[in-house]
Length: 94
Image 1: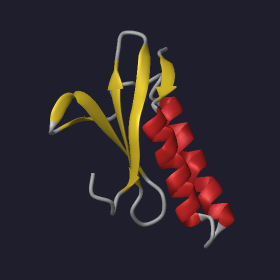
Image 2: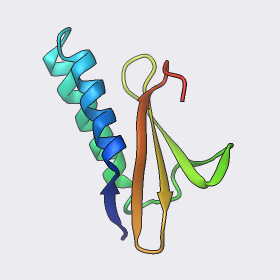
Image 3: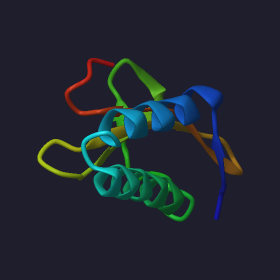
């Protein structure tokens, strides 16, 4: 099992996504972040779950279902860890 590390940009993404949803539904905001955190944690056991990123095969992208659109987690792998690089909503251009 690999260790999980979040880059500062990915943590900022989580805060931004939560801040966007929270005024409309605090419960949905909490659930969305919970689903993203659980999905990232699952990568420690199944690191190749995500698909290789088309632009750079050193990175992978994991689609995360939530609501009608969902989210994406971009990450990279090293020998002993999963590094979460960015997180965004499916409607965002990344």
